[in-house]
Image 1: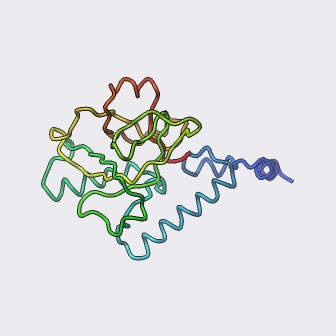
Image 2 (image 1 turned 120 degrees about the vertical axis):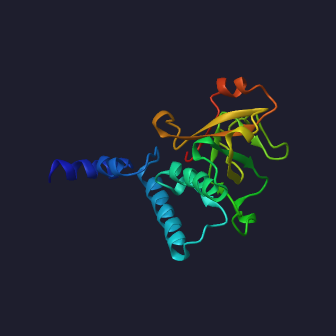
Length: 201
């Protein structure tokens, strides 16, 4: 039995993603069983896309190996359509009050995305703002979000928190984007609380 086989055996026994697999895969903090289920869900999502090449009503942003490319594509298609300079555009994020099952078709421009979680706070669906987290609910899921591209100078920057989006709770190297989310509190409160959106928990 080689050392590679022994390492693989140990990883399987300890429910850890084997290092050679993790090196070639997307960032994840999940154990092997959860990681494998997530991988199967990602494959299923991509197979659905390639089946008819039509944009789904809501896009599972977590399912992408490189979610930044999808968000950039939203800006590029909008820039091409309206002949706007790409370097002077930004993404506008509007949080809806609906779950993914309530959407039947994609928007005419931009995209509905789902599968995000908030850490350090929660989203008040009725008020449409960030609010204090509930006890024992560390990473509540977000409703469907509507992402569209707008000229940077027309972006509404009043009463918003620039919320970073990360692939995992490890943050740092897994940074994806920054979404402006509505808040009635001073944004510094959420900065101190370390509020962020996560693609997986």
